[in-house]
Amino acid sequence: MIRFLTLWASIAVAVAADTFEPSGILLTWQRDPTTTMTIDWHSVDGENGDIDIVPSVAQHKVPITIPVVSRPRAAVLEYRQAGQTRWIRTTGKSEPFPFVEERMSGLHRDGYSQPFPPQGRTIHRVELTGLLPDSRYEFRFDESGKAHRFRTLPKTLTREVRIAMGGDVGYGVWTERMNRVAASHDPDFAVWGGDIAYGDGERQRLGRWYGFFESLTRSLVGKDGRRIPVVIGIGNHETFGGYYASAKVKEAIGGPYVQNDATRKKISPYFYSFFAFPGQPGYNVLDFGDYLSLILLDSGHNNPIEGAQTAWLDETLRARAVVPHVFPVYHVPAFPSLRALNDPSVAGARKHWVPVFEKYNLPVVFENHDHNFKRTYPIRNEKKDPENGVVYLGDGAWGVLVSGLAKDLDQRWYLEKTEPVNHFILARLNGPSAQFEAINIKGETIDRYTARRR
Image (tube, rainbow, N blue to C red; front, side, top):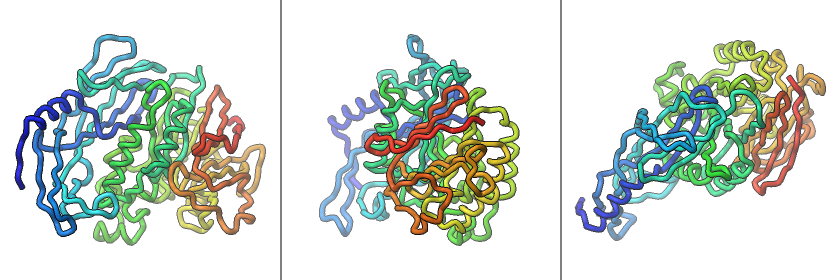
C-alpha cells in the first residue's frame, strides 16, 4: 500500500479537524429526563492526513483512492444553558463500534464489495447532570463547530408533553421521511419499540447502522433546531437469531443460552453498544417527574417473558400505582394484526404480561413487530370491556415495508381499527388526560383516540 500526503490533503485535514462534526448523534436518557441528558456521538477513526491507494481486487480493474481525513477523538464536549455565555467542558467515555468495517474482501452494506482499507468508528458518550427542568441547552464538539440544541423535560405536567411513539424503524429513505414528519409535530422525545436498523447482530450488516445514524442526525430535529431524544427498546432484529431460545443463538454461543451480561452483549452487540438505555438486562423503567413512567420490555429476544421479567414488571407497576401515565412498550404484540395468536412470544406476552397490565389498571400499552397500524378495543379478561379495558396500540411500521393484515382478520375480535400503513403515534399528555393521534408518512391523521383515566 502506497501512502502519500499532499499539501491539499494537509489543508483539508486541518479544516476538518477544526470543524469536526460526528458521523452520528443520538440523545437519550439513562435516568431523570428532567435534569439529565445522555449524548452519544460517533467519530470515524483513521490515520490523520493519510491518503491510501489500494491495490485493485478481482472485481475492480483500477485502484481506488480514498482520503482518510478523520481522527480518533476523546469523549469531550462543551455545553451551556441557552442564553448563557460560558461553556462548560465535560468528559465521558469512549468505546469502539462492535465491529470494524473490513472492506477489502468482505461484504459491506448488504451485498457489494469495495476495496477500501479497514476502518473503525468510535462511540463517545457523555451524561450531563444537574440540569434545570424544562430548559433549553446547547452543546458542541469543537470551539469553532456547530452548536446543537436540546431541551429537558418538565418536573411536573405544567405544559403539554408530546411523544412520538413507534417501532420497526428501518434505515432508508422512508425512515428519514417519517423522522421528519414526526419531528414536524414538535415531540419532546421519541420512543421506538425495537427493530431499529435491522442489523440482527450481524457483522456484515454494519453498514445499515452507518446509514441509520447518518439519517437520524439529519432528520430527527425539531422546528427550532432542537435535537429530539430517543428511548429505544429491543426487538428481534437487534438480536442474532432473533430470540434467545433460537437454534442460531445456541450455535453462536456454543451451547444452551445462559442469562448474563456477556451473553446478551454477544448476541445483541449493536443494541448494548449504541443505546445507553435500557442497558442490561435489556428491560428497564424511565420515570419522568411525577407524571409519566415508560416501561421498556423484552419480548423474548434476550430474556424470557415469563419468570424474572414478569416479576420485575409486577413490582415496577406496583411501585407506580399512582403515576397517571404509565406506558409499557415492547416489540412482539400480545394482540397482533398479522402474526398467529399461537406464536410463542405473542402467546407468552398475552399469558404473562396482559394480566399484570390489567391488575394495575393501565389504559394503554404499545406494541410493534407486525408492520401495520392497529388499535384494539379496550380489553380485559380476553374480552371487550369499554369501561376498564386496556387498549393496545401499534403495530410498528415507522419506516419499513408494511406487511399486510392477517388472513383471518374477521376472527380477530379485539381489533377495532387496523390498516397496513407507515405511521407513528403522537401521544399528547395534558394533566391526567392522554390523547393519541396516528399520523401516516404523508403527515395525515388516520386515527384519534382519547384514553380513559387510570
